[in-house]
Image 1 (cartoon, rainbow, N blue to C red):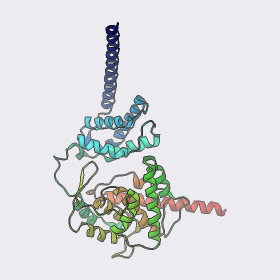
Image 2 (cartoon, rainbow, N blue to C red; image 1 turned 30 degrees about the vertical axis):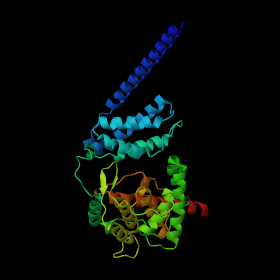
Image 3 (spheres, one colour; image 1 turned 90 degrees about the horizontal axis):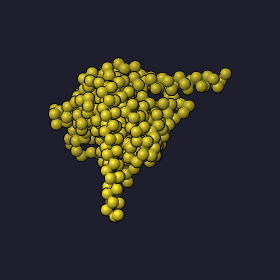
Image 4 (cartoon, rainbow, N blue to C red; image 1 turned 60 degrees about the vertical axis):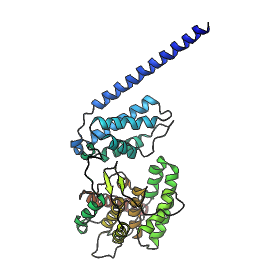
Length: 361
């Protein structure tokens, strides 16, 4: 009797294993079909970004539907997106980095992702892809992207860029920076949003007193951003970003060079330079000097907000300023960044003026 019971249990377990294997194989075949439905070419990425974005969005939704957003579903979602990028030529180690950066901790067990978050993850993943991602890091030539940025920085015609900051201070109807932090960073981690909001309050006080922008000031904000007990120090080793595609060197004068660059954000240094150009340039300086071990994108964003605030300007929206990735060696990216700031500033002025006009009628 006992032997028969054991045989029955073993047979039942075998059936379960077989059913699970069949289910897994069916899922893999389904994924393969989705992968092949988007035959993408990494070398033609600029013309295919919308297709990469659509593919990523559909794959996330497929994983959501298949897993029911149970425990650890987001880990499998990362796996599926990495497989997809690998299938179409992205180096595996680069694919993992890009996927992790795009998701950014915004998916959680037992919680289905909001449609806005899904769209944003897919968009960020598509925007971050570059033709060079097909090479492995060991194959790529050693380059110092900080030095490449400094060369681009000198070549950009900053003084020729239109400036929407010439019309003086503007106080918007709503605090677009704080609202974006609560929505975007709060979806990742409430503690992250709380730290950024504390840093925002501090930087606005610093802006009101006309503080000089340098690494020491950045570090006081970054203490709140990272939740550390002391202001974090300047990094002491080379840094990597964008899935290790960009490498930022380090030397005995790196911090001093950053301070020199940041000092140029003041309105009265050298030849007059537009406010939005100064804000964009300083923000990109922080990105590519990469002074901290973590949180450099947030530090760069706060830098931009500070420079505007120091001249009495706030924005009622910042979506274009936090949802894009810029390359250290692309001379067009600084121009695009300034254009985005000008768009947000012009729209803030327009909406504020419209509201005042409506109230006076």
